[in-house]
Image (cartoon, rainbow, N blue to C red):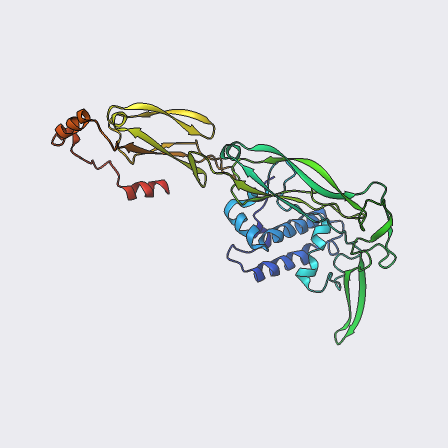
Length: 373
């Protein structure tokens, strides 16, 4: 089933400010909160849906990528990628920012996250991945070596006595409006709800060790330079019963020897000799799927653009492929033999060598306009 538009989920338009986005999410979160809708799977689904929309739209960089590429900007399809797919632990951790306060919010029924144990999330890992234009055009699986923090074998944890395993410390204060209850992460366990019981000597203070791991990553066709993909759960592990962080893969596009990328279209400069331009010929050129041979018609003019449809880059949104635009450049020799000079001297006044542009011969500016239309 296709994902709904994030703006539609929050009931806002694309021009909404960050304050309006936050307000819209707060309204949806209250409406579909599990405490208000116990055992209502539809409400829980909408609660998660709103949280995912807010996670993207509240971040200016993610919002810009979503506005340009839609859901595909965050979906890798088949390699553990997701578009910020969140679990309830991720969502409840947002409430400190949305509803104010140091780390929690209460006063609604049993309290937002009422009784919910705060689960610590491990830190994310970030890597840059260089891809050739051919890999981007066809999609590719890459194996990435990373060093992750994982729980050391033999490490055991016990319930934190300060927070009794909840990961949070609740405080009640008296105000002119009555008694107010707030929750903040437990300082003793860092919000994990557990502390070290036993650990091997090689482990750090949190019972973790560094381990090298090779992670297969499926890169979808059509990614762009600077795009960041997420492999869920492949970052650093968290101590105790926490959840692992994510592996964030930043795409870096390598320059191609003969092709230039412009969105989903590719450009190729083809240089032909004067005899080939006059008499016609065929030339072999590079594409991202191999070499193809194209025909040079007799009388080909310099500046002519040949469009090879579907020979560009697949759209990241799945809207087909771009084109390969071949720019024909007639190469004028800089040195000539006496015989060659005499020939061209004799052709100066020949009508066949006199420029006679036709209405169908577009100007440079018309060609540029066509390229972007």
